[in-house]
Amino acid sequence: MTDTDIVTWLRSIRHNDRSVELHCQQAANEIERLREERDDLLNRVKDASILLYDWDGYYDPETGKGNAKMLAEIVEEAYTLLQGESWRKPNGVNQM
Image (cartoon, rainbow, N blue to C red):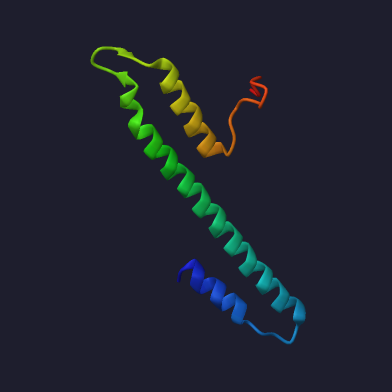
């Protein structure tokens, strides 16, 4: 049984006790909310992974040379994708 099946089943419950029916609806809503949150988090991980995959354009492990500034920008952008915001405040002061 999938989460969609469970939500459908919960929404179909009809009961003489209105509170039971209400609790089922609330449970269905919470499952849907958690599913949306899970999907958002998975997409963030995917997006950050794709971004980090391209790090080699800024650093060559064979020569040990590269563009540290651009590599640092990739790290910050990946962090922002994962956390939803940078670790820096808008005025450039570190939050950590």
